[in-house]
Image (cartoon, rainbow, N blue to C red; front, side, top):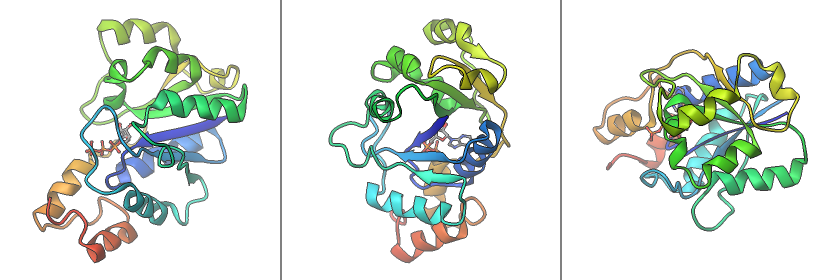
Length: 210
Ligand code: ATP
């Protein structure tokens, strides 16, 4: 089974890393692949250039064999559409089960993603709970996802795509937005992200000017 966890990681923090590791353990797979996007199509552009966000990701996972980085979106021109990423993974891995992990807040906007219905045919979704975000109650997303929901990891291994699992993870109320705000205000962001990541940010004066 392959599992990717996409995001802007602007910058990477413990709210990404701890859930990603819990995901790797819960799915009992060798690695979860963190997948930084170059040009997010559905949200404001990252403050930090892709190459720097990648540097920080590398520092963050340097001593964790259960986490890896997939740089395919950084190598592609144009908007980083997840559907294109999944098609390229599918071409590489054939019929192997493919999981896309995302936080609950990201899930609630899934129906605004480019060709989102096709995404459900290309992968399983593993939705990680996040403080203050809830499962969509009504609308097209709730309707479309309800019949796909499964309660355990086992069914994900049986098919290449098409199931939706909610995974309870340690709730960490940390966001990259808050970290950027703290740094721009000259305040400490310590203990919200790995020390090596914060150290590099401070050395380079990244995020210091908003
Ligand atoms: P920003 O504040 O800039 O929007 P973010 O902290 O939400 O950033 P992203 O890189 O946008 O981080 O998120 C990537 C993925 O990680 C998304 O699927 C998001 O839901 C998930 N995620 C981010 N922070 C958390 C958290 N604290 N707990 C669980 N999931 C999270």
